[in-house]
Image 1 (cartoon, rainbow, N blue to C red):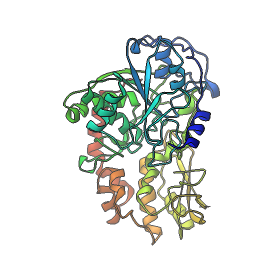
Image 2: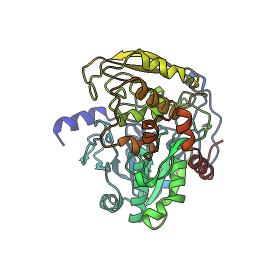
Image 3: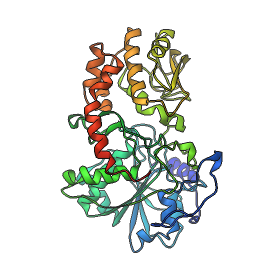
Image 4: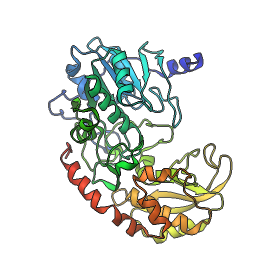
Length: 425
């Protein structure tokens, strides 16, 4: 790693001692005042672990899978906090896509280096799985792997598959696995969208879950360990989870009182997360998904698209969202530096809004009104939707309702399975 990156990472890192929390590691949360903005005060899995004196790590040698979202309420990174606490033996960090300190763009990572702030070795997990990842855990010398990363609720957001891959690798290596929970920022309501067909498994979807899964990372870990890890590793991993207190399934992120740290460079706000599980589908087309703008995944467009798209999308009558004719010039990615036309999504009723159905409706109307519409040559849309069904139905002229009906049966089965692993009211 170049010296300049080390210096940058050192400047970005924060130091400090472990902060107090209001809940024990296993008991109920104590009463707390209202969170900023009028929301409840949610205590994350890390809050509860620290408040319990790190009892679950007592006598253990731990490594942690995390990124810039692994922070306390006052925005200290938990690696810095744990490293400074004599009660914890933290000896390694494992970085996912974008890296531990978050210096890499999509499809990149920070590689292997020593963290300037703590001196801890940072191992790269991106695009590693199975025995190769188990060997990294063995080489690190840890006996317990901890996971703490903020998810956004979409099947194709890679951090949940980093979770899955690390669980499989930990099972192969005989390591204990501890998941510290954080909120699903777009609520934990019913799952929506198509369920992955295993024939289309990839790093944007390893196992058959819904496109918008409606679960927290700890709930997903329980589901993975109950349904999928034993098949991949030959046995389940030794798993423990630390749940949040104060979080309810109907909560959007602004009800939690927690600070938002972008989980990746193109996830700047909770508003982005709200639409992402639907509009990320445009990564599988030749249209811009808004990368290189200040509103990624809320702005969509291409050269030659005009006001007809917003009008056609509006005619669908999709609940909770308005579509505005928009023009923008991405600073990078598709159509870099070129002014293009398209739409901006404005969600006006979050409770009624269905991001996946909205994403499908936008694909259907884009193909109808813009003659230049095309799928990505590698049919990446199939990996995002989990099968070829959405692509082939849109090509055949199917409408939004017809396409949504095609995934209803498998979604119903997943919802029934999912209920067994839910842990919040």
